[in-house]
Image (cartoon, rainbow, N blue to C red):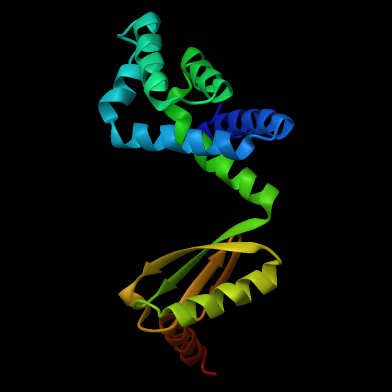
Length: 181
């Protein structure tokens, strides 16, 4: 089974529990905290995933971490299940998919704006408002800078891609000239 299929299955299961008890946002926060912790502590990932360590010792490591983090019982049990099923290494992917599911549930889309240089707050807000109007969703922005664009911006929202960069326009002109238009 692919890691994406595993991530989807576990994220959906946790979300189903969270929707039942109304705590899906809290579970998402705790899952994100744990995924971030694992990303920043590679030795802990090794301690939790290495088959050379017996399962009982790996459980003790996880229990210690969960005690310090003071997670809710559902989150604790979920992470213990991931350990038992040897899926703890997929925590980052599960977290990403869980975030997408909760964003969909709340009507939030993530948009990426790529520009040749830093944009002013006014421009960012105008683009954000335009995207929100097009998608009828709240927008969470990610800003990136790519000097190779020369000018303009590229906006990505899900499968939508709006390329208003000077680089794209120059490529379009180049193709037109090649075709003799």
